[in-house]
Image 1 (tube, rainbow, N blue to C red):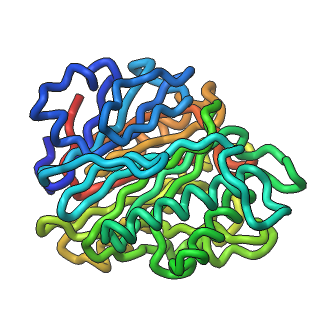
Image 2 (tube, helix red, strand yellow):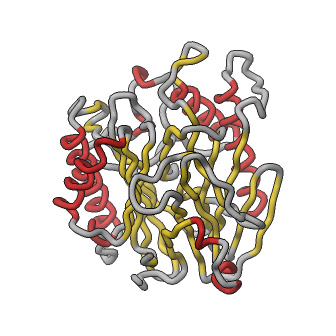
Image 3 (cartoon, one colour):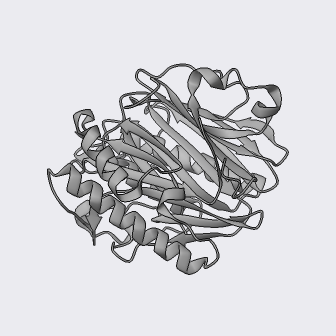
Amino acid sequence: MNQACAMLRLDVLPASRLSQLAGDERDTILGGVCFSHPARAVDTTALPLLNVDMAVLHGEASLCEIWHSHEPLQSGQVGAIRYRQGDTLLFGSVRLDENAAVSSDERASPLQATTEAAYQSIFELLDTLAYPSLLRVWNYFPAINRESHAMERYRQFNTGRQAAFLAKGRAVIGKVPAACALGSAGGGLQIAFLATRANMISIENPRQVSAYHYPRQYGLRSPTFARAGLVRLGGHDILFISGTASIVGHQTLHHGDVVAQTQECLHNITAVVAEANRQAPGADFRLDRLAYTVYVRHSEELDAVRREIAHVIGDPAAIVFLQADVCRADLQVEIEASGGHAIGRR
């Protein structure tokens, strides 16, 4: 196991093993996300865990990405949000049906209204419990590229997310969290989030226009996320790299070529890692020491994606491959990563 930062550890394990963990090991769980198709119920008593309807493309039929902390932890629930908190970190999860909220904007779609309500609830919880920095967010909802209510659903989501940031006085430019948004096979809007009382630095990619500065051709409200989030915990720098795709500037490159898109994803991750090392000179983040989650739109393209990743990175510390729709219909693959924390080996 990588002992880089004992305060935070990522374990990737079959869902069947989660309920078998000993009491002391369960006590260290902050929260996490489990993937399977169809989504399988996992024992989540008092734990903020999402069960996402998303097919695992290698190994076990159901995998969980579980975050642990050595801090004393306590569980709580406010409304639909379950959370676990320590002195420094808080992990939360929320699942809402799309008809769960009504917006003051009569033009808002159900997804937009539900997204705005979910994020407002998250910010209210973090304000109440005094975790000022929203560090990393994972967003999942069905049919991300489908048009409804005269707008693509990903753009509906972005509109609702940014409305919540603004309503709660949160920055929408600059200091914003790392994030991803993927299309699941079902299950409503599901959000997992990691917040901290430590100072968070938002990292941008010099090869890309910041998502919050995208031109209006990508929607009336820009996506509210940074390319990565950097935080120092327990004397160690930890990096969370957002979902990263084949985008240079603000444009999709390599239409229809999954190998070239995978290469471009890795070029972008390399640039983000270099920028993080520039801002945290002692961190020494390296591609082969990161943990990766790879979302592939077409399962038959998995082998090509895997070969390209192996060619560039070799054998990374941990990697999970999932079948998911990506936020733009012309994107075939998206890769997220994290590093600087401990990584458990299955």
